[in-house]
Image (cartoon, rainbow, N blue to C red; front, side, top):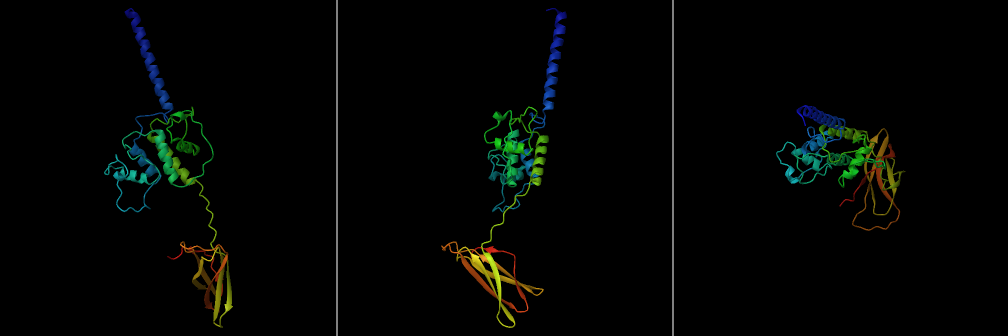
Length: 292
């Protein structure tokens, strides 16, 4: 090949290589929310701290016999590390981090999703619609991670790209992690509170009757229906105000160490009030365990 032919050929090769490089860069940029980006990828320690702080996780209600240390729960987390406290909090807030987890390792999208959903689930019980989101690269999802990913997709906390891909093995970036945590916090805040049905009262058909004991004293009898004769019934106090005597009472659970016949039983309690007061039954219902 002559020198004149070599120069155009080399120039053409150079242009081709540059074109491929630019195309690859553009592809990575357009899919930056899902593709691995080593410059912005986060480590395990960063991910854990972001979740703990972003969702306001804590261990304030837990009482420890001794001061907890990270080394009590993890083999590779040093007690003097600045993030050690966040790992302890994570241990008690549903993240379910492996005991041998490496704080310096990079975090994949599926790992982060599993930890985030664990923290979300620990915050309460949420209603999930019966839906399965189709993921183009679901075969790449590690066994045991799909449920977390599905729930986050249903809640619009996580998203797929325009090819319906999740990229489970790609590294999680700080920007995407921040958005997912913010969406999770909003999901928790906006979730409807569960309606809890009040427990039916132990004693039913509670009644009050008054009888003249003397000119100055009135006898007040409270009666109620109990499931069996093991239940107790007692008057706990009387509040006098504006000509009324409000009779307070409570039910007492049966002795758990005894057997009782399942027979509907009427239980009673008696008290006395000044005759110039009208007896009124308190609407506050209290049940206490058997004293023992």
